[in-house]
Image (tube, rainbow, N blue to C red; front, side, top):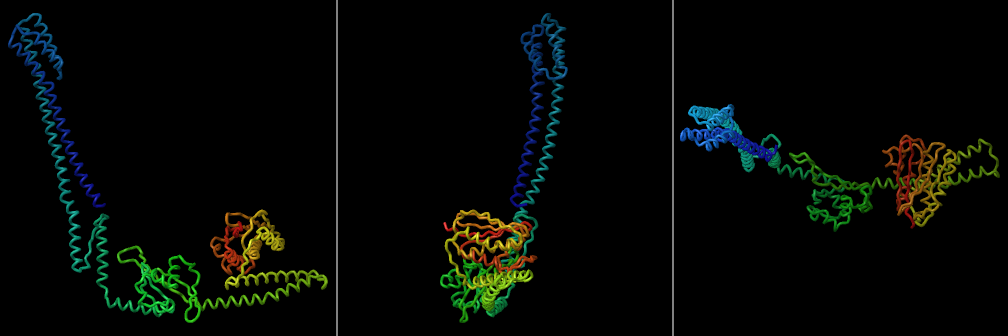
Length: 572
């Protein structure tokens, strides 16, 4: 419980005790007042009326003033309060009536007897009510005594404990601060609970622990460790730059100094943003680190060691858990440039080799197709059924080999940046029609029906017509390849403000969610499928459509098929 809550509770208890004591006292006084008022308001009046009537009888005797006597008698009749008083008063009235008719000494004696009886009755009532009031007073004193004693005990307990509860921790804290000031960093505070003092003790202990840790450290050892780390960083073959949490440069190794053209004296302790204004490479690195530059997957080309070198940037955040705390705190960042020039050269060599082999394959493949056409020509001779089947099989293999060779050439052109795009207005209806005709033969073999749901009033697009048709044809070809026999492949078009979207839907096996992000990567094929293909078609399609300012995406569900959508920029 917090200190404020405890103080509020203690003072609230005292307040309630005071209210309870005051309420009890007021109640008992009112009860005592009521008992006393009953004596004064009833019995005293009856005595007074009887005394006055007695006085009239004593003063006048037989010649009693009946009118005045009757006046007091009527007052007595209206002030009947005790048991038996009504009968005595009635006897008095009857005796007085008889006296008024015929005054006699005997009747007068009866009246005096009646008055004596009424006075005795009220005197006895006064004694009884006085005893009742006395009992009420004693009970009031007892209750007030008990309540006062209880309040006194509670109040005394609070007075004794509450100041100590507040003062003792402050005293202990003051003494601990004196110990810390005297460099006794082993001093600790120990409080249980969840109040402010416990929180203060925890913060104090954390401070003392950090001071003790700092005091126990050896400066020479720290300097040795610093030199060891600097030597280790300088021995790295990759450029490394260290930044603190405010992007101030803490260290930079020799490799980084060479590629940036900076010196240690002009860079250490300076903010990277300020240096980036005068250094293009540092500005590029900082933009990529802050996420304002190009994708971090792209490599940096830097002229280094008398040649064009390629580097991959890595950003490594440095986080620690401070002593006495539980949350991580970022204290800086490493910028590491990994030299991947050798891997890039190998990749370029691979690309060049694939391009050369693919280019060399095209001529013999074309010759093979020409020879197969000649074999199928009746003028060169008639083929029997088995020979015709062999020729058809060879023709399919040649087509597949030519398609693979074309895909390899396309991907090498994309990787080397040699793809040529002729961007102009194109009729998207014509592109879809030609792509469907290209795949009709393969679709008929699998008894698959291609349904073109696109309308003929689609607007023209801005694209390279040949590559746009290749993309649509590739999507249709994939849909046919992964569809079951006797299925359908649907082509739909949707127009937006900026693009014309062409969707190709199949009802095949579908693609699992964990593979959907990878289908556009080079050479990727969905695991578990036995369909032929190089795994390059979708990668090439994405590169082509991206270069033309469009996009391609996928929606798929296992067992229900896939929908590939390609968006071309509208011409108007």
